[in-house]
Amino acid sequence: MAKILIVDDEEGIRMLYTMELQDEGYEVITLPDGKDLLNVVDTEQPDCVVLDIKMREYNGLDLLQQLRKKYYDLPVILNSAYSSFKIDLKAVAADYYVVKSSDLSELKDKLKVALEAQIPE
Amino acid sequence: MKNREENPHGVTQADIIVGIPSCNEASSIPFPTRQADKGLVKYYSDRTAVIINCDNNSPDDTRQAFMQTSTSTPKIYLSTGDGVQGKGNNLLMLFQKAVELSAQAILVVDADVTSITPLWVHNLIEPLFEDYEFVAPLYVRHKYDGPFTSNLIYPLTRALYGRRVRQPIGGDVGFSGRVAGMYLESPYWDEDVGGFGINIWMTTTAIRNKIPVIQSFMGRPRVHRVRDTPTSMDSMFKAVTGTLFELMCRFDTFWKEVKWSRPTAVFGFGAGDVEMAPPVEIDMSVLWNKMMEGVHAHWDFYGQLLNDENRLKLEEVSGLPQDSFEFPTGLWAKIVYDFGVAYKRRDLPRDRLLESLLPLYYAKTLSFVLETKDMNSQQVEEYIEDQCLQFEKTKPYLLNRWFAS
Image (cartoon, rainbow over all chains, first blue to last red; front, side):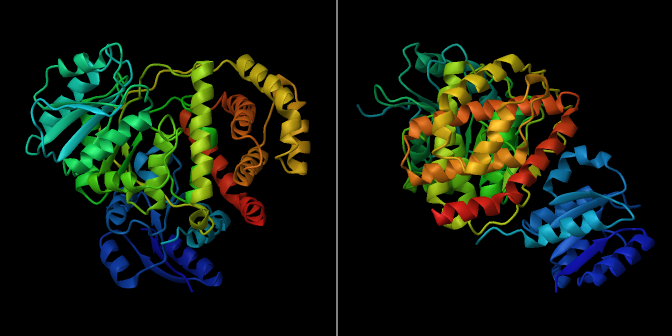
């Protein structure tokens, strides 16, 4: 069972994603901000991170840069209510960019693809 | 005739090398040489460095223009033997010299680039002193700058090897000394790699060998002498696609295991004000005429290499009027894959095969221009992203045909 880490400062989003993704068969863990992100990734070893961009005290794009330095190939999906961050060059380092919606089908599709992606060792 | 070397400073070791390949660039080479020197002095004064011109014994005396350019950094001049030309052959001398000088970081800058700044030197070298060993450039580009990359090279390379390097044939790149050694040991080197095929060869070889790759943001467009005259476009197209297909044959046990694609990290944020790219005009009637002439000339030949269904759809597409012309990306991807499979079979004349892909590339470019004419650069990037996903989704078609043949 793939383990997904959701990082989002909105509790409602964390609850919705947890329910929906658990229904899809994923194990889900959540973080309300980026404070302990690297530690949690170290200890929990998620298979994919779904990362909000505009959080109260953290910028998901900066967190993505920190993640990429240590985890070159950890799948990361940026998830934001805003599409405007797509033009930020830092977003290129994400596997996919999904604009938030009450319909999670695009997020689920991208999650599936991100988890299937493989480059042989 | 053997290669020639002039090393007036007697350089025997260098942490950093800036290599400038050239052929008849006497009028243009002083500028990148001075900019490279400024970058080395500004950012790497604590390291040993050398600037190397890798030339083809240019009759216009590029050597003198280079050696007489005033720099703080020592310089070396290398030349291929008489009659040997091509960027790849120039860089082959650079790889050898990099190993000889025990260089840690090598930067290649084309001699005709007029937009290089000292910051480029930093951005293409600095990741090599961190965790990366190959640095691809990420220039600011107008939406119609580089349609060859956007419509063919990037989607195909990404679908095959699974690593997203947006400008895999960018002329200015950085790589480590270890990678220079790896290039030297590569068993595959031919005339195309010795020429325009060198950039796709370097990028693909790095990805295939699991070298940590990063893209570096240059903060401005790449301005250089225009090379897309019909003749140079033909030879460049054939050398690059020929190299790409040859690599496809050699690395098929690798790419058959690749699924979807993974991003590549980006270096170089905070490059200051980003300079906008100048507009690029594409003459659609030229594309249309080249497509129609080429498709007509090669129609029977296509019958020998395209899947029947794809040939029928191509017939349908080529019957569309110019103002509403559209070449669906799914069909384009399958046709490109058909060409790859035909290349692998090696039962058709190689030059004719590559030549016959060119009008179809013009057709795809025409369709791309028509579909994106009202889009801004960001929307076009999203369009290209969608094209890439279609190449990735269509990859099972390639796998079936490639490994059945």
